[in-house]
Length: 370
Image (cartoon, rainbow, N blue to C red; front, side, top):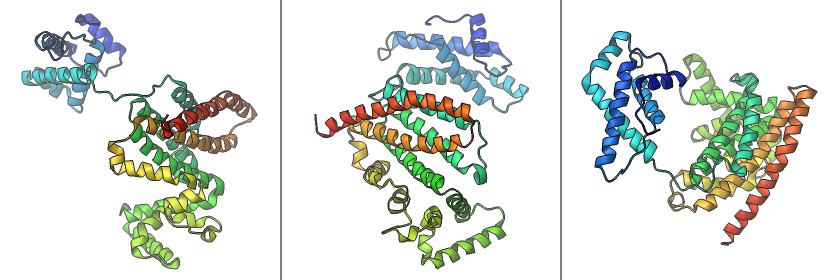
């Protein structure tokens, strides 16, 4: 689509992409026309860009984005003044041309080791999408009743975000996203295992978190809760400096016999991760923390190594999250719904296991330097 659109064609495209009601199509078409011809001239006169092929659809999206954002909240008279201001029109043409040339034609892309069509990405994304669609059928965002569903929903969202980063060539960034997913899955496992005991304690510490951030509008209640926090900390021998970790991890003290666990601490590695039975991931978690805090490991990382490290750990987290999902889902559906899900699982879960096995074999060779 390298030809300048006629005004009638321009109007049809705007209507098809469901743009908001625009008072003056004439103004928009004028900006489009000037920008289009301006980009063509840049191509002719600048060796840097060479012969430019212009995609009018992309150009129109940049145009509408600039116009709608710039006039948001304007009344009709203000929009009219905006359209009649020649300096604004000139500026819009320049901005749209710059964005089109930089972000559409010459956008920087990282070297990519995968894409969304390859089975290691597409198969798990398909499964995550199916689970997400099921979860959205249920009530959410009511912590007292939907905490596990809400955390499960967020975990699926984080998993998809990790896949997107891998597809875009951001392997180290994807590993730090897996780090967050790993934290979520540890909490999910404990909440699902201990149910009301853990859930109620977690909700209480969520409220304590608001106290710590001075986020209560009811200051009298906040003061009462703050004293309650100090009393509970004194009862277990914690000092004022320990308040943050108590608020974040103290809910785990509700779990039966937790204090009898050797070397248990109110932290992630020796507390939450250990209680969830996933302490074997502590070294990988520490590696992701190094990347998160901008050590040389972030700057001079091996893309292929971190790709496989991330995708394998993502799969393993997914397998555990899927088990929580299945236990939760089966409590809420009839026999017909269970059967349909089991049929879907029989087909795709086995494929995910196979993919994990194959990717693990490749990763072992990479670690051996082969």
